[in-house]
Image (cartoon, rainbow over the protein chains, first blue to last red):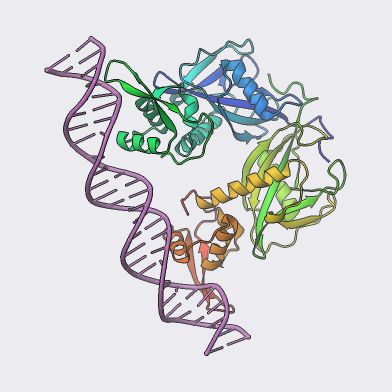
Length: 222
Length: 222
DNA sequence: GCAAAAGTGTTGAGATTACACCCATGC
DNA sequence: GCATGGGTGTAATCTCAACACTTTTGC
């Protein structure tokens, strides 16, 4: 039977890879560990799951503690259980990834950590635990899922131009897309709705759009 | 820091959804729970992960204990952490799914369980824990993955005919495929190699094939 | 007026689908 | 000889990729 011998067993943690787009770069939120074997190293925010809390609740809590944000796209990524991940103890880590909109307020300070900062995913430092692998895994999942779902909605503000949307795709996928084909496809899928207003700037004004649904939908985008 | 308070924390288990094809049906291995709140109910085989064992090792162990089989396709499915899954305790369950070849010897008996049997996935009973959800999840993953990988190799014996291969796809996907298109596509992809011999039976003999690689490859099959 | 991004259709290639007849065997 | 699954090619359709010029604005 289960759950009888509670001592001498692995513990459970969640770690959250929080992506955002900032300043033309794809970034993730990292925290700097204060002490222990990984002191001074950066890691994804996370923590032990207390008895009675669901994994998704723990991940959501972690996310809102670090960013103040709620109601964003959050997905379970993978569970890492190698006993050697953490030299201190056998911790099974359930990794999540989250997408938070551009231009989020700066990360909240947390006395548990030395620092909390956004880092460009292309230049991550050597991370604590197995978090460099987690980062690769998260990025791979994000790339594939972007192509067959509408989850990009969670990276964008409520209103945006088609150019901005396309730049997000290009940034994450790491390749440029044909503008006419992209617009045609996206519009035909009915994921967007023109808002009737325009964004003015240094160049020709661009029509503003909204997502018709701000909830996950499986759809072949690219 | 992590791993300090080990008492009063959720425990970790693995559960394995083992698929096979038998008698023209897609089946999964179920065990009948002996006692506790779920006594007499069927469930997927699983058990607690001991300190120091990796998740994949625990799943592999569970698989070989129940079937005597090794070296089959095994993939992590999802981690279920709802505290109410198991009324007895908060157990975080990491679910795996495995594909074992047709015509496997009958499941090994295990004194931990009342019975161990193969069940048609189309007619599963009401299962213990949240295992009916796990079953749906596993089946959905199997269906999508079948279409873009070669993992079907793990459901088939070393040699097989194209007709047998096609029947496996049709069975799992629940729809019929065009024979000529199917054969053309599969052969062009180079996943198979004709073995030069034929299987004789009540009708016209069919050419025997082998997989060129018996390891997972991502490839658009359908 | 010039630099920069917005906006807009068509064509060709390749991939996918639909479809029908003969063959080899066991009984 | 007949019932059953094995084996094979082509045409129509659809999807995807490539491609260039005009417009609007701020400076």
